[in-house]
Amino acid sequence: MTNNEPAENRILDLDPEDHLELNRVLGTALGVAREQLEAHGVFLPFGIALETAAEGEQGELRLVAVQPPETQDPEEDIDAEAMMADLVELLTQQREGFTAIALVSDVTLLDDGRDAVHANGEHAKGGAVAVVQAYTPPAAEGGEWTFDAPAAEPGELYIWG
Image: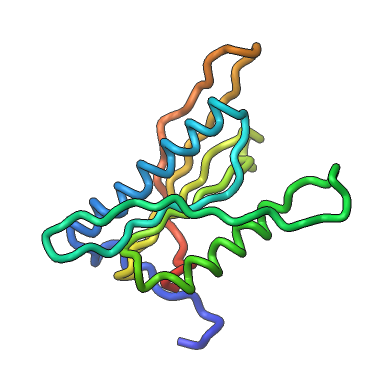
């Protein structure tokens, strides 16, 4: 494998405990994104990281975020891609302290133009799975947000790739 080739996603090689750890970071990630949407109508990219724990213990979850890049124009949109790149860099530098990580962003689905929460979960043992949850904001202020059932798809290895 050369440095330009992506690492192999070994999701099927993970044991049940590893899958539970991935589910834990992904479930927490979707919950935090949902809370931010319902409270503020938006969210910036963030990560949920599961700290490595002693044998037989459960690691703590950490919310990880980075500052948006500074721009000269205060009216300019926030560069979410740059924020995600900074988040990946930060978590890659700190990955030895984590067992599993979810990277979370707000995306637009190309098929139907709907907004969705995208959470890419990675395990230190090399497995990755992504979860996409489309949503619809309330029609009127103070109304209810509608969230579709999450759908799983193959993930990418950004941190342990």
